[in-house]
Image 1: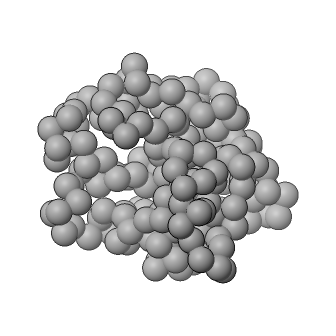
Image 2 (image 1 turned 135 degrees about the vertical axis):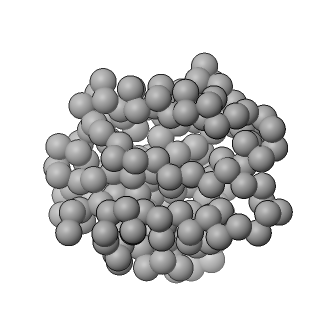
Length: 180
């Protein structure tokens, strides 16, 4: 079974926006995030992304535009020596009551099937409560970063707190140091 790390996208890999990331031009990596992914890859980890993208259902951008955003992201990751094995996303509106929108576990089930892994204890790094809830519900190891909405999320939590790091780079180095 490969060592796997699951990443949320907005607020973890790239800067988030309350107006949504609607074009490749709006996609900007968070300092250190591309290096973090490269470090994880060099240490033998398979990196997948699990992201809610309701902007599609809201008609803010199309699947074609999302593909272009993801191409920019994967090209940036590749240029730093990293690799994203696959990007899983939920295109549905929050009111659609789908199973794939985090905090539900449909995206994680898709990842588990794709990688033929149960994902138990797999690090899932996110910046929102829904990331933490999805990770816990599926048996992953929730890790919170303080980028994106992370500080706000941390302020809304009660103990016990999930493992928390300043950013993706700090989380990645800790995962590598601990061997998972």
